[in-house]
Structure formats: structure tokens, C-alpha cells
Amino acid sequence: MARERKLRKTLLHLTLRGLPELELFPTEQARTEALNEIGTEAGNPAQGSYWKAVAIFVFAVVSIVFIGRWVFAKIDWPTWLEDTLRGAAWLLTFVLVLRWLHRGGAQGELREKLLKNGVPVCLGCGYLLRGLASTTPRCPECGMEIDTRVRELLSAMDQPSREATAFPATQPLDQAH
Image (cartoon, rainbow, N blue to C red; front, side):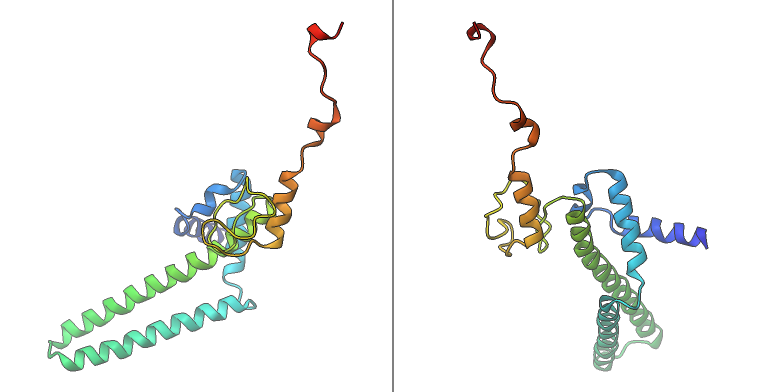
């Protein structure tokens, strides 16, 4: 069981490699924890996103079956070639749709995890919003309205740190006397 769990985590890390959101985590530990949480949540049938993914996947496979039947009805190829092409189309559809659903859902989850880690990112496109004023209405990358949680993070970053304001500016030494 532990071996299977470790294999799932390794596969999850490999399939999500290259997502730009992974580079924005403040620490390696925060990134690993986020990936582990996503791995735990991904196969949970109690979530609506799970059933949405199943519906999209079934629709894609059924569509390929009907398109394949239509194409093969128009062309007279040997049965072995049709069976080979049909199997390859199903396998390709399976891999592409599964990867698209997996990475697309994981990107949104990673953006949520980044917000929890104090990293202000656009929930629509993943653009790093650090340095923007908290009054900025929209993401400069995609134009989506900035979420209130992101605004809170940005306004906290706008506040001068306590250390900087705790001590008043001192006069230079040569002007002190």
C-alpha cells in the first residue's frame, strides 16, 4: 500500500512537471506538500470536479468511436488495419484527454495552494501579481478581475514593515553635534 502511494506521488510529480505554478512556491517543502494534497484530492469521487472529468472523458471516447465508425465506413481498408487504427485512436484519446484534464485541474489547485502559501497569483492564468498595487482592478496578463484574497495579500505587501517604521530616521553622525 505504501509502495503504491509512493508510485502515485512520483507519477503525479512527473505528469505535472513543467507547470509554471510549481516554480512560484516559496519552498521545496511547500511545493511537495501541495502536490501531495492534490494527489490525495484527485481521485476523490466526492468532489464535483471528479465527475465532471469522468463525463468529459466518456464524451471524448464516445465521440472517437462514432467518428471512427464514420471514417471507416467511407474507406475500405483491411480489418486488421482498421482495428489497429481504432485502438491507436482510443489510446491517443485516452492519454491526451486524461493529461489535459489532469494538468488543467492541477493548475487551478496549485494556484489555490499558492494563495494559501502567501503568493499572490491570478487564479485565471497563474500570473505572479507580486509588486502590483492592491487597487489594481484586473490581472495585467489575462484581464480577469483580481480575487479578494489576492487583494488582501497585495495590501499586506503594500504595508511597510514594522521594522522599517519602528525606529525614526537618525541624523548622520557628522551632524549630530
